[in-house]
Length: 202
Image 1 (cartoon, helix red, strand yellow):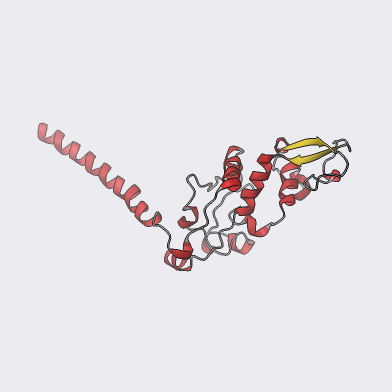
Image 2 (cartoon, rainbow, N blue to C red):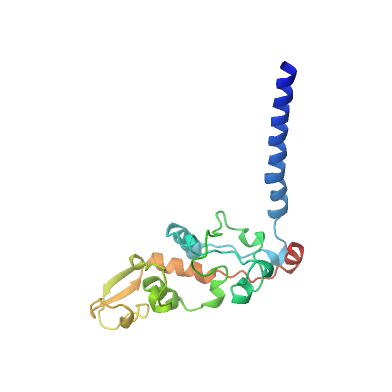
């Protein structure tokens, strides 16, 4: 009886150890290999790092992914969402990468290469329907503030025709949180060279 229980316990322990090796040790060796030379993605810091936290706090990953699929798994590259598939090294400096859940919006892995104007993002955040008519993206107007226009309008203010209902004596300005969020979005560019690693993962 004791021998049978010992064998059962040994079998359970063996299954646990085998599972640990297969699901933790092996992926860690394959996916967490430090990048080499120019393959190192640029780290986020300062305003971009703050914007990354705001991105997470506002649930952007619930509708947008940051994963460019290989050509045989979808049309991401054909859509212009990236010039290559996403690889594990792309998240090397990210403690909590925003892979995303579903794609109710476009993939944002390289949105910083597609859009360079911060005002485009401000308008999108304040009134998404002005950029994409009929979109289901909600407005994030709480990321903006209304300030009385004293003389000349602030160049960072949204155009009056895009802020209906706001009195002409007021101007809509992005808050520090909106500025940081847009800085993060503009930083999303995973087109740095990792040719060797890409070949190894094809």
